[in-house]
Length: 440
Image 1 (spheres, helix red, strand yellow):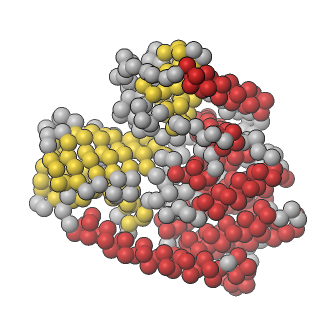
Image 2 (cartoon, rainbow, N blue to C red):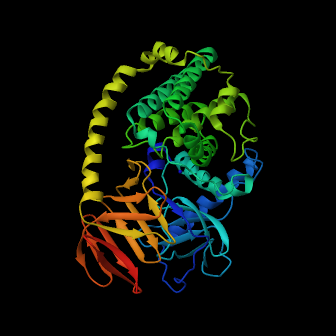
Image 3 (cartoon, rainbow, N blue to C red):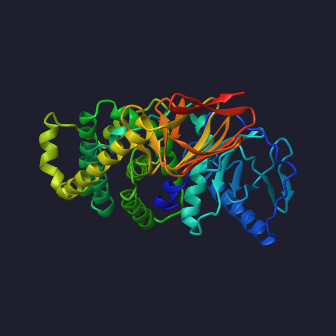
């Protein structure tokens, strides 16, 4: 998954489908010869680079099936054929059209007999950023094979709360100071303080430790892999991490994007001491416990007093003032959302066989009901829902709610900032003041 801002702004797909069928075999692919040569060169260079790495980082070769997909026309450029003959040999690459039911995103994809890494075009122009992105996605492809099968992530809603954000920022400020220093003792001091802020955050929010760990195992390790193998010099790598943290602060919310900056930085420091630090990790590992033990950090009994004695060194007053102002705006948004999704007329759609993509940078936890996604695309048995101005996804992913329909036909239904393309076997019905979908 790039510099960090580019990483996180790209859509992530979450699919509840095991595989996808392809009905686009006869679609026309239009790619210039120069582009085909360019992509072939990218594949060759990536394969050559990872052959030299020889799977040392995870004791497993990272290079494998890779799809580049143009989101404008769904054109595929692949480094190898699929098993069903859908992709066609085109020079030194393979091309085809991705079916409309598959959401385009930077993500692993089980399709046509293979597990692929999908990467959205255009590719980053910067060599290191591009390498970072491709290797991040290649790691996701092999995660199940190296001990991380059936990963389930929990959303860290506390990171949209006032103190959750404050103490995450203080942790990252301490890590930034560690990156800026070449003195081992100074580095250790700042890493210790970062971990103290982290542990204090967990004291404030029961369950936060386990929730954060699920995303740090899934995305944090992927981004650590992408960044540590991005062929950057040590100086450039530290600068990359510092910029990634600063860019991260601009994310509207932190609940799903924090892992892209925390684990890569801790991993970088551990890698300096032990190149094999990651090889004992499984999906059951708690990374906070591992990191705390690795750096021999003892959590004091008077943790709150210790935090109060160090927090201003990392800009607590400035961070707190900003976050209080932001929190007031958040509360106003939640009140407006309560009217939109609970009190006003809505369309509530049951999810049966969902695949969806979203932007992890801007999602907002909504009370105990679920999460508001400002932008998303869902495909399901009933059709395709595209959202540009917000939808509420239930906390168990069983229902999605949008505002009142304002334009209704047999196949196209629209509302404020959303569009539903309805399959022919489904229809819109009204129940009381609200709407839902029903199979004919």
